[in-house]
Length: 417
Image (cartoon, rainbow, N blue to C red; front, side):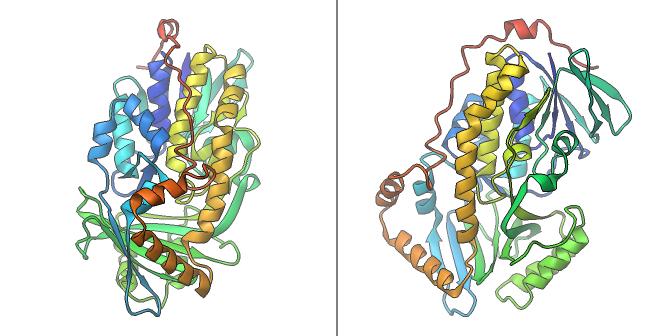
């Protein structure tokens, strides 16, 4: 059974790993000419995703690439002294098993563990894919070639091409939740090692961090607006213009960071937008990760959700013998509660991460002081009172698919030379 996955970032290679483990023949197509190794930002893997990483046999490579960021120093606009937060205390409250890793590093690890069993096609993208009457999907690529697959999976992110082709315009399914995010690759002129440093004001926040094995650093910008901004997600010049305007006059290192925009090797800018689809499947096509259920970049644990979604989708296809008519609904039912709870959490996080008023800024400072004075064990115990809040990831129980043999599916494997 031949399955095409669009997208080679996180969800795509993770899904490819599990599908090949169950004996399916997998091709991954990626628009970029190769793996993205020049940018990326820090992402979090919480307990369920870490458990999956361990089952994939890549726990040690993931741990070896953790960012190592332990402290946050935050300046406040109008205040003399910065406040410091021991991030270990925060993460202990969120999850008993957690790693922060650069997105590109995680993508490379997943690619490395799958490249011998999966066909990767870089520098191409899906142009059209009408279902054939024979029960297959005929895919025409931008390169002009045509291939036939039994199933197609969109793992191509928030601005998914597969979703657009099958479900319609992105605007039908997106809900802006009030803020924007930018990440820029910059020189590590502060020599940050194990520390993030930044500045916060009403409606905006900027920070800079490094990682244990990175020579450069990342500058992150969050800001609120009353109304959505007008720009195209591929119009980088316009995005930089909007970012400069929003952080004009901010002190600390912000002027120097903004001066790096035009020389930066990588730049990311997007709205903190939530996807809300009633279903992630149509016919022989389904979606996984941010392409189907992004709860909001940087606020909803979308990377962990994508890893878990890939694991469940592959498992349900194996459990139902590749019958998508039964597997896709089972996948949606199994991941649905995690998706809905992640959406709810993201809505609150988007409001808390950037103070909207001076009172919110003051409350954030008091919260940091409280966390710094509470014992880690007490912080962890208090957070466990409700799994609907910060502990939502650790409350997810993974279904065991190990009993499903791949022998039958392997006998029908095919691959394109």
